[in-house]
Image 1 (tube, rainbow, N blue to C red):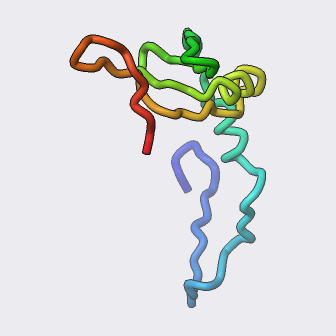
Image 2: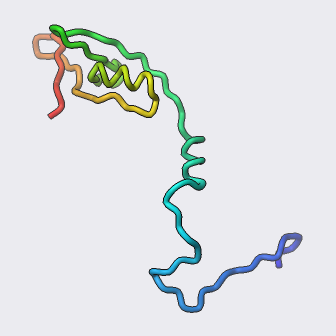
Image 3: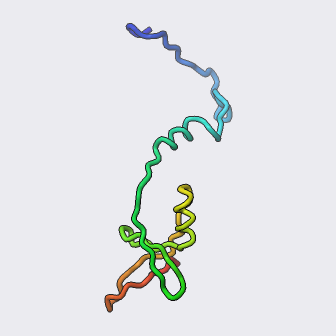
Length: 103
């Protein structure tokens, strides 16, 4: 017994086996989901858009990431969706900007 505290009891398992549990594990629900929801922070990013030919793109200037425009619009409506990164905006030797597409 601790001084001024509650009685504490330690559990002991006389013959523990690696394939047996002291409790029934659950893969869904529980504290992890609640804790994850609390730990999520919203981050606002200023996205620019541009058009090359007849194709529209979304661009994150802080990360130099270029996104598929349709996936950007979906992500804007639904915060659980991430826009599809199609490449990065880079400068050529001539000083022009171009998209370096992901392989």
